[in-house]
Length: 104
Image 1 (tube, rainbow, N blue to C red):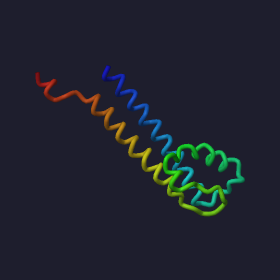
Image 2 (tube, rainbow, N blue to C red; image 1 turned 135 degrees about the horizontal axis):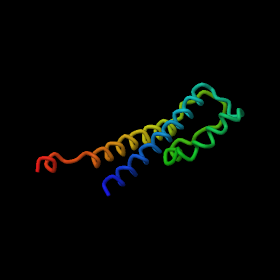
Image 3 (cartoon, one colour; image 1 turned 135 degrees about the vertical axis):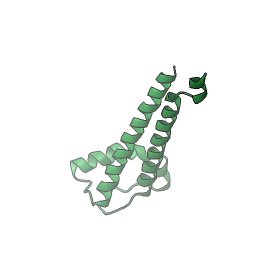
Image 4 (tube, rainbow, N blue to C red; image 1 turned 90 degrees about the vertical axis):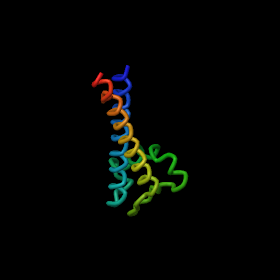
């Protein structure tokens, strides 16, 4: 049972890391003046827009073709990154046997 929950936690950590990676690509595209008319940039922006929740309510992202460091994307990236680290550490904690159990 422990291994199954650790596997689920590792899977969630991986998904969180992938989402953080997508948000990083979004940030890079926005900072490097990615033109929203470009199909690739438009796809990245449309895929990552739902991932900006709940920060997009505070700082709505702009689709205008201008250099912009989106606060919502930056905070979402940080949130998913920290969540992935914490989930990975929790999985590691579950997988690691206790020292007292080994000594007995």
